[in-house]
Structure formats: C-alpha cells, structure tokens
Image 1: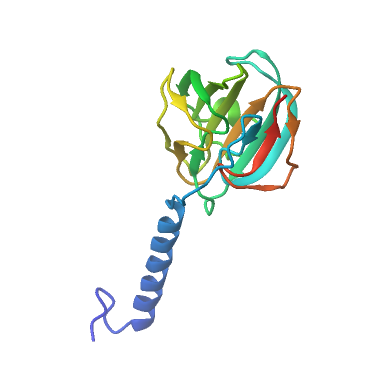
Image 2: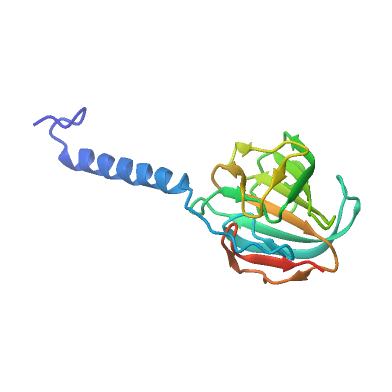
Length: 196
C-alpha cells in the first residue's frame, strides 16, 4: 500500500496526518468568534479581550491623552479568542496605526515599540478611554474596523489580532479597578473597572 509519498511507511504517514489534523483544529479554534452578550452599563469598562491580566499600574500616557492613567493590560495567548470588543459605549475620538517590531507581547517595551494601534473612545459622559492593540512575536497582523467619529456600543467588535498579543486599556485615575493581576478575562463580559 502507498501512503501518499510515504511508501511502506504507515507510521510516518499516520504521524504526519495526526499532526496536520491537530494544527488544522488549532487554527479553527483560534479564529472562532463566539456570540457574546455584554451586560451593558455606562459606568462599567468591560474587558476588550479574552486573556489574562498581566499589568495594573499607574503610568503616564504620552501619545494622545498626555496625562496620568491606570493601565490595565490583557495578554492573549494563542488559545484565547482574539476578537477585540469595545469596553465602553461612545464615539471614536482618535485612531492611529503604528508599524513596529514584534517583541513578545508581555515585554514592557512592546506597547511602544511593537506594531500597534491606538484608539480613544469618548463615553457619553465625556470620559476618554484609550486602548492599544499590540501585536506580539507571533501576531504579525492587527485588524481593525474603526474610523474617527464612528459610534460603538459597549461590547461591539472593533478588531482582531492574530495569535499571541496584548490589549492595553488606559483608565482615569479615579476609576475603581475590579480585576487583579493573574485574573482571566472574557472579552465584552468581564468588568475591568467602574467609572465615577
């Protein structure tokens, strides 16, 4: 019997077939986009992505807001859903794409050196929330469905990052953070913070 290029080697054929099936299933699993019902609340900032909280710190946002903020960063591993969802309802005030490097997504400099997008949404009460999609070492493509002036509902899909990556959210200093380092998040569902 001939095994498609592996004559008389059924073990090699079966191993190759098994690895191919596993890779195919992993790619299918990665590109999934499950239906999400967001618990809409104008005071809540929900997680923009599935993943793990890796940073909660006070920092200075230097690109657009140019003030002190609380940064909450969510790392998405290759097995997470990589659809990005709007954490608040509002209008897009600012959007910019930056070409860059492909450092691992959890590297501290990835948020300023990697390929990334910066997006600012102003809530109906006038609070600007800045988000940054950051490509990682494997994630070499960021997709976004955003333009300045566009209105979004809380939980609405606004982008996608392929394979391992990160999303940073910059909150006002008086926001009450509701997650801790190491917590798992569900995009469009987990409450990251409460606004005053």
